[in-house]
Image 1: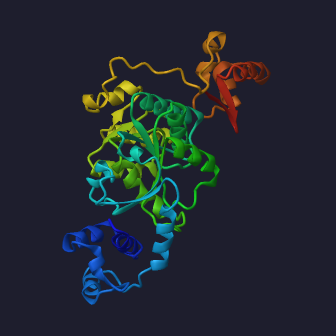
Image 2: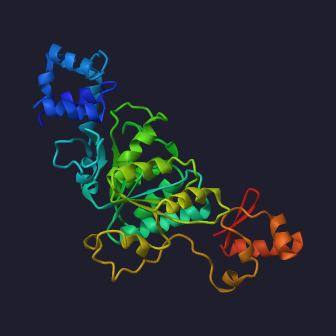
Image 3: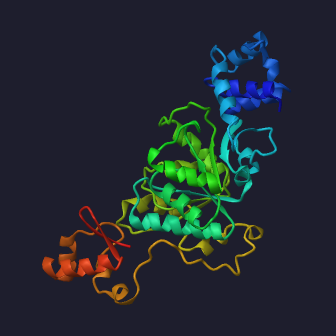
Length: 366
């Protein structure tokens, strides 16, 4: 695509109200989008078409287009249109595929076999460990991990992929000239070495709340299936599964304690037909066999994250009374009949062994 034609794609991408469906309708009508403009101004017939489509009058933002094009001149920065061979085939199949993708990093990651992983921004320690380990094993098995770079489950999933030397894709809800959340800036820089950052939003777009549900359709659209690790009933992660269902993708969910509010979203998905996942093999059962030729020989690698301590700590009689959600000390007193002083020494021993972790209000089991 020549620079003039690309500029026309970019200026329409910045037009308010000119979403993927109107973009697709225009592409069916026009062989070249440059036909819609004359010396930088919208042609009268094109303006009439816009008004018929419900798009209000607008002024082309060519200054914004210059920013997009200048950004793409940087190393490893790419603008991919829906007509580009590099545009991911999985994403192109969804009904509202973005007409333009801004991509930073290794372009080949876009066409890899991807599994999306989503979940709470405020997960339990067990939830973070599950996300890390499933991402690690999926990458060891040849899949890439796609998520949204949010805090919590997204972060743990990206970290697991990176730890396995695998590929990971982060879909962002803002322009790629900024980074949100800022706490994940170092993680984003690591992702650029082993994957890509992707956004449909033009350069300069700020991380507004309304952008993030919209980006979720890309997370699911790029992937073969979506694994929900830990999510409450009102979690934004369930928006991703809604898109995934509309796109005909597989839905996987990890169960948890019935006392854990962060497991209720996963349990609801399982009741509605999502695959209940307790191990990687449960996911592989639902994916076409040709996508994972190593399935019969695959053995999980030794993971760098801390594992429950073995030996006497793993058999400690207090452990069954400590849940993966916060268990207060007074609850342990009631369950065990021990005094607070007796419990304190046992809890310290288990914490030093890495079996439990102190959290506000009590302890959780690792």
